Image (cartoon, rainbow, N blue to C red; front, top):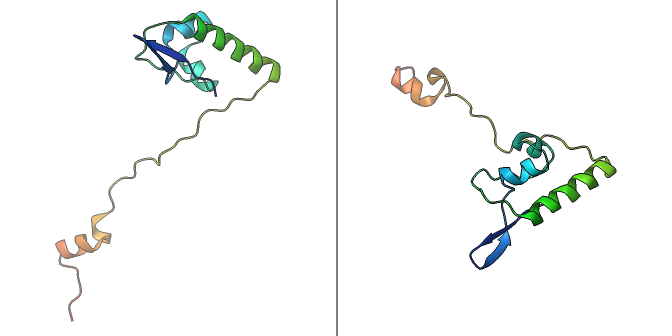
Length: 101
């Protein structure tokens, strides 16, 4: 996995994703970058030459290795609607359907 370098004041750290300017420099859109497995951080505005060089090298390696990139899998389950109230115990109590002996 490729990750960018972020400089802030006197610190250098590993970033969460590449900026839009860095992606433009290698002629990538944010959507295409995500499909290729390259992280994109929309909050970053700066552009560092080291990150652009790293991206160019990564894309060159990906072309020569002919890596098949897939769309990332969905990590969470889709939202499921509310259960039909008549089938639940609370719904039966509400409609007076609970059996009493």
